[in-house]
Image (cartoon, rainbow, N blue to C red):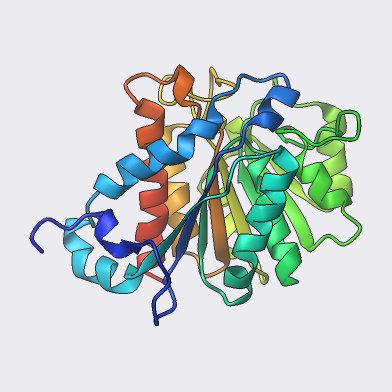
Length: 293
């Protein structure tokens, strides 16, 4: 084929050969509303796929890219239902792939998606670390006993059967984090970095030093709103997209990273699909890194 696209390497059904990676959508945003945010992230998986599928392999590494990643497997979307049901189903669908060391890419959804992502590791019995690029810590307490988009990492860390050994987060906005939440992360043995301290050394720590599998999560509201307006909670002083995309490549390149999710893209508030296109390019960069492992 002369005009190869990402869609040419992603299959919709299991074949005889194990997939090189799997892709799955989780169109959930009930947790965003519970957290006082604006709904719309449930529409993101379909649009991210649209732009991802149109992208080409990198021209200087096209053969390596296609050989390393073919075939990928798209499992479609988790059926919509209650937030908790969708999280449980996501965890069930990805557990066997994580157990068999097949990279997993998840298209959210609000950040409540990541609790379902984590359930995949718990179901598979795989100990891991979590690294998060985000403007917020997302370790808020649950509300009336229910999770939401601001609580996934507290739910994970407080889980009596947790398989998460460490939670680290970078890109935090100093005007959007509570001291109590930073202390909670420290008490749990984690690390945090404010926006102004999020640099290349942080990427080295996130993706290069772990001796256990890493779950990487990318919350689009960590990117500056001039470059990513279509999110659940816009960030006036966020990370630059060039750093963001490099982080996605580095995550894909690292053999420690076993899975990633792309969350908090809200097409309802986007401009010319600018944010959705950036989300698709984030996944493309992860795939590019993955092809070079």
